[in-house]
Amino acid sequence: RLVQYSLKCGAVAIGHLGGASEFTKVADADRGRLIEIVVDEVAGRVPVFIGATAPATRAAVDYAKQAEALGADMLMVAMPYVFTPTRDELFDYYKAISEAVSLPIIVQDVPSSDALLSVDLICRMYDELEHVHYVKAEGKDFLAKSLELIERTGGRMGVIGGAAGHHLIHLLRIGVTSFMTGTEALDVHAAVVRAYFEGDEEKAAQIYYERLLPYLMFYTEHN
Image (cartoon, rainbow, N blue to C red; front, side):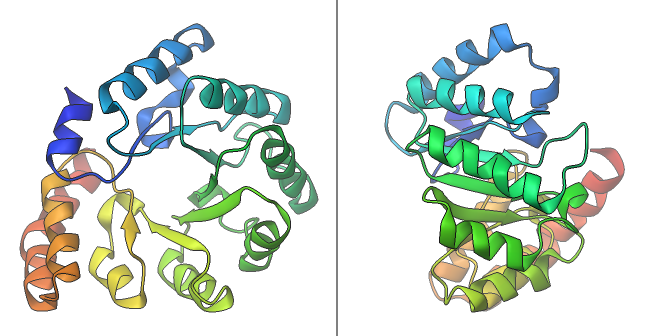
């Protein structure tokens, strides 16, 4: 039902086993079945991306291979979440995943990785790792970081907006064209993006400020 709702609201991709999917609560024995359900429900209508974040490199590689074997089109991977790696270890973590699969990788920059995943490191991974194609910037200064990533890569790297929809209108204005804001209130998020892409920035801003921001205030307190 959740997949069908997302597609009805105009989602251009469907993902699972990311942070908001509470993947850390999912047993390994259940991951495959969840991936199969999502891929089956989407039925090729839009790309499917699957999270492969893990506490250690070997586990992340295994998750990535499993997702590819079960029909995922892309991967999303955040920093290992038990022990904090060094920058070199973090680069090697993404390198191992990139070399193990043939799927495009979304680097998810979450608040806990914001300091480690510098613009320099992200650009290095984009330049040197074959399958690192996108970044979802959600750290403390994600708006400024998104702009710098777009400018540093000349717009070549796909920068995805997140953070539940905070600063959605501002991300559109700096050139972000794809968003992963969660499934709750997806119709409202989509309405902002659709109005902006149709050339009506005033309508997009009105929906953002009058409908989305009040919702986000409630969401922040009662998520």
